[in-house]
Image (tube, rainbow, N blue to C red; front, top):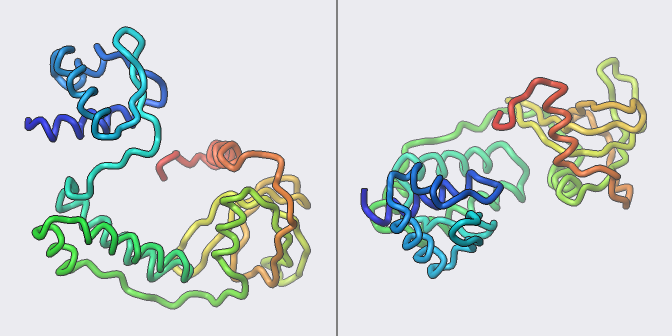
Length: 229
């Protein structure tokens, strides 16, 4: 294994640990000596990786350090291209533009061989018909990001209408519809709202009292959904 590949493996290993991990454990998993591990950590720190810790206490990688795009494999490049094209085809305008802009930035710093793979990719995403929506999905995403309550007028399955105050924390993308998972103050429980059935929407102007990460975890437990699903 080359030293560059070993450094990347070390970064990925540190990313998987949310708590400090000992140098001995890291060295054992990488199959290297503890002396080599210390040198590799010093190299990564010199290159800007925010690795905290010291021998005997353990190490942790703080968020913010990213892998150089030139280290992407061909399969990873294809996954990024396909993902950005799917986002452009099936999400809202702002998110679609963000996906395209992200690929432009990545492509700009790729070596020639990988840049050509992006530009000549044969993976395409078909655009299908989607049930039309009245409200802006981008505004819902913003409310989720800032943990803001939304007030909505909603048309139920039986075509009756109701006013709700919801705490949105997730958006699901299906073939023809998008669905918001939220805590509903009216029902005092988690509910799922099809975006195309939201007749009007406004920000309530206040944060909801729980963290969205906690709500997502609880929702997953109730619905038997694995974290990476």
